Length: 150
Length: 184
Image 1 (cartoon, rainbow over the protein chains, first blue to last red):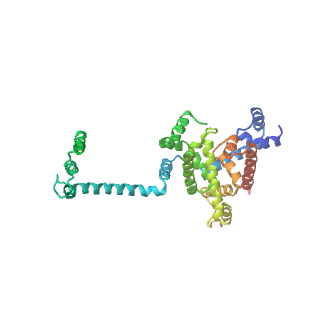
Image 2: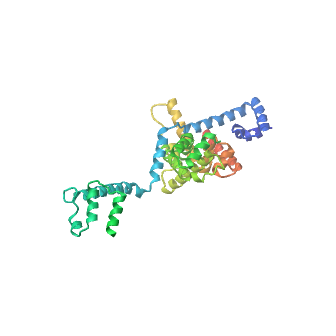
Image 3: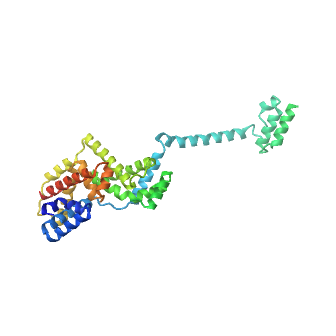
């Protein structure tokens, strides 16, 4: 291999991309040729400089930033404010329902007047039991239905 | 090349395990950030771009078939994303690295004597950075993937979806450009 052919293949040699036989020939030439060795070292120095321009260290903060970004992208932009708003609204609605159930006439155990007025004794009884935390059992409910049918 | 540990992380991440994906980010973040810095030559923009690369990888994970190494797939996403940024930069007519190189070339020498070693070193780095930034984008891609990320010609070709001959040719031209500019 002549001098020109070695120079032509020097980058491939430095990159480890040549076949073993060609690499051996070039290595033999380099051992005897100071000029080609200098060219090889120039190439290696430039590569080190380029690599040094973008020296980067591991960064746990970078990993956290990526995962935060993924979490933020997981919810559509509209849902991100709607979900807490809905949760707040639902919670408020539940409070109002509970307050409405216990307000009545201020006396525990008394049904709303309209139910008693229409003679809906069973509904009134059920209302009283619910309000006093006496949840009707299955038999009690069936009993009410049977009594109604008869 | 993927390790069995990495394969496990990929499998779990594909099932939606974000802790597993965080493990993949930890394995590859240095390479991706270094590549983005080399292509964009702006550290802040490169950090943001690198984060976005991993977000895109998470979103596209179901499409990773394992035909190439995970690192090659990530590199491909990174190169494409950085190309988009560079095109967008050109469209916005931001100060280009060519302009920056010109600006560096017009900087007057400081008064008060010859620069010390640290200043000369900083000047050399600035000059090399400007030179790298002034290369055509496709030459810069192969040069950064080879000299900074240490990829083989085969892996560079897979990343850029081109041939090894094209990689060799562009690498040769890029290195010649750097050598010629360094002599002046």
